[in-house]
Image (cartoon, rainbow, N blue to C red; front, side):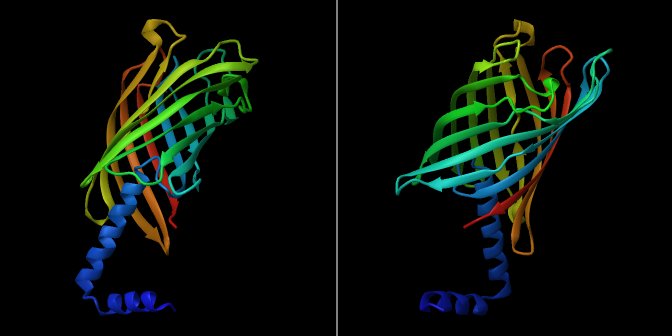
Length: 267
């Protein structure tokens, strides 16, 4: 064992139990804050379950499981490339009379963020985002190849992590009947508490610019709580949030419940 590592291990073994607990708690808090940073240099695999209640004229519940692996790459001493991919698995019951139900994969959405490797209090990233028409059923996707710019900006001040992610995409090809011109805006605010707990709000707001004015926006409001813990040596971040759609298109869901399990692989 290198001398430095041996010295650190010896110091830890001599540290009083209360000090060890405080050090572990501080480590959990810092790791929780990294999970709240969309461009952190951290490999993670979130499994995000979304329940959309009272959808369509049948007031059906639509379930969407977003598998969202995040993989960072170190380009050089100054820049990182953060890849974030959303792979939705959708269970959509019949929403209207004479409409079929559908289950399967939706359209896959990868995003690439180029972000400075050495950031201060202000952290940012920019890059392209894409959507591929991978839906296994015509009801579960747009049938279009789309592309557009994406950006994220945030700041970490004490226990606070505050920022926003935004992108806009336009369709460029595909067999779908409607062109795509849509924006996603996700503000997020987190307040970190001791022992890996935190309060959070990260609503996903969308704007469909091709829809009529009254049906363009979906604006959820709400929030919830999260907790980071370990299964053996594997850190796991869990989160539960609820949202009410204060503004939404006709027949869209009025309530959403989001539960997320995020597996973390820190270096």
